[in-house]
Amino acid sequence: MHTKEKLLRSALDLFLRHGYERTSMIQIARHAGISKPGIYHHFQSKEILFQEVLDFFFEQMKEWSIKRFAACTTTHDLLHAFFQSLRSFREVTDTVLRGKSVPSEYSFLELILAASKRDPQIQKKIGESFMITREHLAKALSKAQQRGEIRSDLDPEIMALHIHALIEGLSVISYLDKSVDVDAIGEDLFRNMWILLSKATAQ
Image (cartoon, rainbow, N blue to C red; front, side):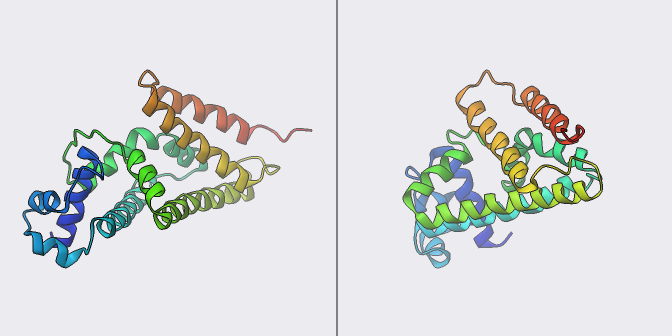
């Protein structure tokens, strides 16, 4: 593994464990087995490092998503897998951190929300990532309409936003309310959404 990638993985690990504010460049360097001058050779500041951690994570997430959804041959399967993404999101973090189980005090959601408040550029980057997700989903829904798999009277872009909002909303709720069973609720939301999408066009 290259030094820069090792630093990115170590930074993500420590940010999840201790948060952005309580993680120093020296701690990250030590965690990665790199000298203090070594980390500053690759990253001029912690903020720049954090931005590259986000880029690295989203790229890893993209690769993971491609592999995960590659086996979905129908829109039904694709949407089902999408609604199960919360349960599977842990796999992405484990993959990025080489399978290490992180006893994290902070969620990735907390990290990106806090970062968005600190830096408008990070907010824009995260917003663009969300937009790409919705665009892919809307394209899949549009193709499903063309194949006659789902209702043709629904706006695919609005439905993509609807589905995305349900997923992200459930993520926040389940984080704040530990009694929420993400697996069970995810299944229920998927079934209800599929009924909405696949039922005959309203007269």
